[in-house]
Length: 316
Image (cartoon, rainbow, N blue to C red; front, side, top):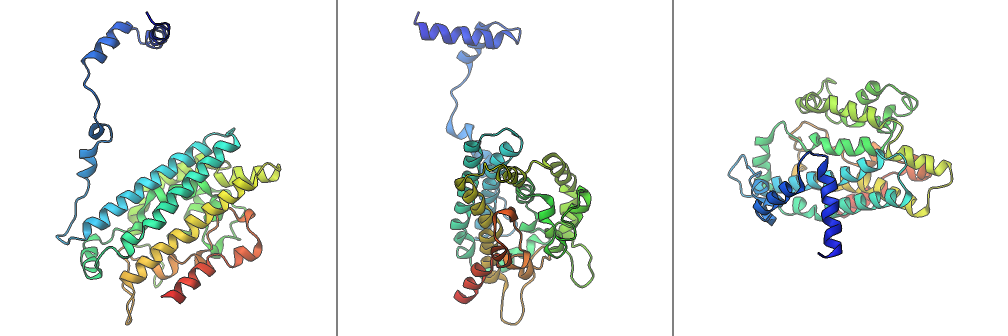
């Protein structure tokens, strides 16, 4: 018998001996099993059954599919980020590769956003969106988990209170003051919108659990430690800065473009389905959300997102 084949069979015998079964039993099972197919491997039929429009409007399918694609990209990004934050002794090359991958995922999302901005008829969108109330893209739990994996929770506090809570260590207190909650709070009364109440009810415990698990070992914590010890390479530094820009400037601006196209009108602005104040929530120059503040100059932080936002306003 071929020596390589014999070696493989011996390795399989060792692997399966721990189960208390003979290798021959597993080989018999292999003989009985069907070949795997592409459609079964990726669960294609299940995937294509997940698009369930709530109205007869043609363009609602575009809206659903694009958001599902977006969530899959978020899952890819979380796959990389969790590998980084759960491996305290990760090597620099693996660290940098994970960040590069996340940058590519967000680049792809930004470049494809024209599907949302230009790919639907405004009149159809304004009709089928009414069936979505109070649902909102604001309720993307994976996006919040991306933020929690990357940033120190103190840096996610709303800009107006960030300095006040810069040294706060209580996770519940920090989560209560996280920036996005203000975006779904009614300005007139200070009460939480139904969108926010639903979101907190479903994911609040999960967010707290993740924040506790990652405390002190987020991507930001690890990067700051590398910088302090003189181990942060220029390549990794640039990758981290790019990630900051993609998630906190360019991606929100794409959403702002979409909101302006579909929700803004001369007489008054159309409210978002979740009741969020998109005019103040989406533009990055108002939020000044920065994952790695130690990698930016004071001038860059003070002007955060301003040039991108101003250039867009001039163009439109």
